[in-house]
Image (tube, rainbow, N blue to C red; front, side, top):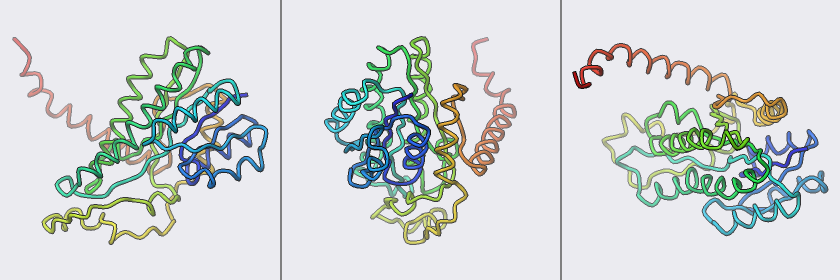
Length: 274
């Protein structure tokens, strides 16, 4: 029986993972900024579930959540860094405070939570960290640059950490969702300093022009089941695209990058000492 600590369980992928974890018989610490939104889990699973407040911009709440998890269940086997949000703006339009908040929530908060869980995992000589990234980390879309940058940063932190802790029995996996039928698109932040010169390239991505029809292909509950089954099997990739759209976007982007590297290899090689 594994103990999972999952952030952002009030909706979407986090909720789907929490549901699948508890259904499987494992234990879960389900967290959200508003704990009332996840307390329903404890009604159905009073012995195997703990609902806690956790805010990725509040170090004390993260410390308290990790301490409470260990006090209740004695260990943390799987950390799922799922909580995060999006921000739509052209690079020049992007507001400094919004960029700071975005990186605090999408990068620095998850990184701090990893640092808090790692001592327990090192002591156990086992553990798994699952960081929820995005296809945006692989292929940035216009009007989405800083969100993509935050997720790309999380991916590279994950890659480095995976190499640092492998000999300690700890694994790190990044998952890259495509478009999922969640409230993510309803909670996007957008710029308040619109520059008309970018309307042609970025206009369609601005909040006022976006409607969430909740018809995205990604299924949060199916994702939860896939992740729980993979963890149980012990066979884990370093990166896992989530959704057929993610597979296509990532494959096309990586093939395009490889083609470009090959096409310009001659010029790249000319920069070596000879």
